[in-house]
Length: 327
Image 1 (spheres, rainbow, N blue to C red):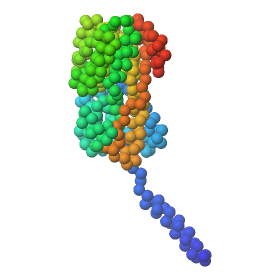
Image 2: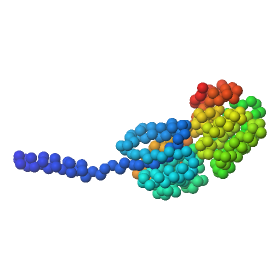
Image 3: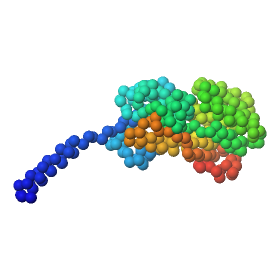
Image 4: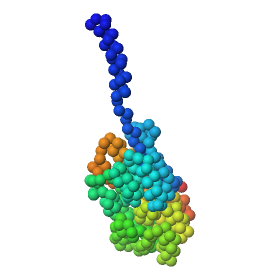
């Protein structure tokens, strides 16, 4: 190669490199819309979601943006929050429950939605089946076998004096709660426990419900999984203490906010796993083809401070099985 051809080749290469770089399309920065609860107990859950994103290599602000709005859990505020996020043209919603998924879908019918802890996505019309959602909604469900409530009843019975009556708090408007109540009632018959079902449909029903339980001389309260109860868990625990009721919750947040104990799915793990769904959708997967997964980890939490206030001694057989003891 002569000198002129060599210089010409070098010059062409130097000019072509910047042009090729300029031709590369900029990588899309996804915008995720989320409503974040202001409850103190919810903070670790959202941190678990953020941790899940970091584990997958995402840096918020560089690889993706998260548009957040605060919520107190009221349906009206949720609807307004999702409408505001939809106006920002977010690419994907991350939501918690069935109700919030419905609210997001209403304002943005075609935007992908990842649920974190849906109660009954098929019953709510959000998915055809868990294995094949079929639309733009996927994620994780908190839905477990109804028999888990029999386990909770057994734990509470062991912590209470022999022959104690136990109430069960449920929302009759929830199809899942009705199923859970049937399983709890069947377990109660097997154990010889006298069960007192107590209905609560609205927040205003809580105080009258505890008045009824006090009159019924129950010693314990089993709380079924229900968004209404989660939103008002502090108030429920306050009323439980006022009426000297030992209560068991289906998630750790209930025990952490003053309940006697909890046994059920590890919700932080669900939030962490939700990041994986975001990753798959960003990678091009269709939400309708991503199966809705159920909980894989379960945890037992005991609140000894509450036990002491109620004058209860938790058996060693329960303490030894606990994943966490709050002292």
